[in-house]
Length: 82
Image (cartoon, rainbow, N blue to C red):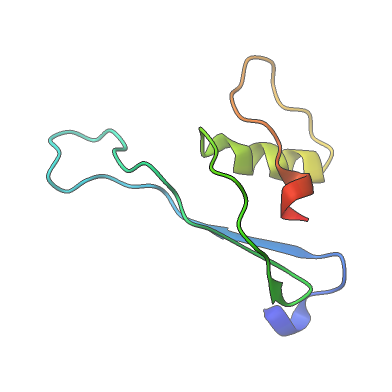
């Protein structure tokens, strides 16, 4: 996959923050999600901690020119990812 990336491509890999196995219930209980971004075959440095996982969705939406629905949480961090 990395060998097929072009100059302006951005690869974002992430995962759900998951559940603490000792917690009763199905609520997400982990505080952070992993975020790995790769641009031009180089791993990029860290971005600041954010309040919500929704920044990834907002960033993808901005990248493709899709407006976020009114009242949704999260803001784009696309500039930091690029």
